[in-house]
Length: 308
Ligand SMILES: Nc1ncnc2c1ncn2[C@@H]1O[C@H](COP(=O)(O)OP(=O)(O)OP(=O)(O)O)[C@@H](O)[C@H]1O
Image (cartoon, rainbow, N blue to C red; front, side):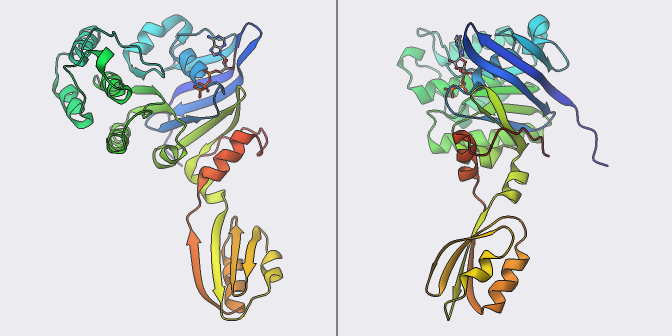
């Protein structure tokens, strides 16, 4: 039996309306201790609204939310003590430098040991001596990231954390995410970067028009998503041999080359390829971009699974 997991966040039938405008409708998910959980979805899907409810910044219209077993509507203070939050629209005081922001924040958090903070500043190359008004977007974001991570919170809630960051700083962020979960802590982040989500996230929740369209493990999505196989033959093969196989689609065929999309088991396709005298094979790793984009477009139907 797998070891029991503890849900740090549990959301059930969560709905929030803004007057006549819809915010989110009937949202359900859980986040387990020590995982990286990703929120994806088109603009206006409801990611920020959900995050704000978790932190007690918005009240739900209906439904239930627990973070560390606490109700954000009544116990936000206790929740926030254990959270590092990077808001989507980071508001820094224009006249204060990065160092002043970090000092203020350390005082609020009662943080006296500056070593981890200093390491983070160095890793991100955060500029500490410039007033926030003169910082570029990426450099403001680095200050926000240091503020979110520096007190080693149990739960990090990061709304589009890598927006504006250059690729080297994005790599540093990715390392930090891995180290944080290796330390048993938990991360929720929203992103529009599908590639980043595939690299970092263990379970993903895709929202669309305020509803959950899927919640699933990224690895299980990868296992079930189609992979592209290109086969080469000395003599043109018979494409219908492949078309008859379950889960196989012929994308194109051209003389001795055939390109297939294969979902699920590959063995029957490999046997057919050998029977036809294949001389070469190229397989491309399943890419979730297309699958994610399908969910964004609403093509996959709105069934919420909760895989591994
Ligand atoms: N304060 C508010 N007042 C009115 N409507 C709001 C408010 N906040 C959010 N909404 C509405 O709720 C819906 C979800 O918005 P939300 O900001 O949560 O989306 P999002 O997924 O974070 O989008 P993005 O990717 O653009 O940041 C939208 O229709 C939005 O207009």
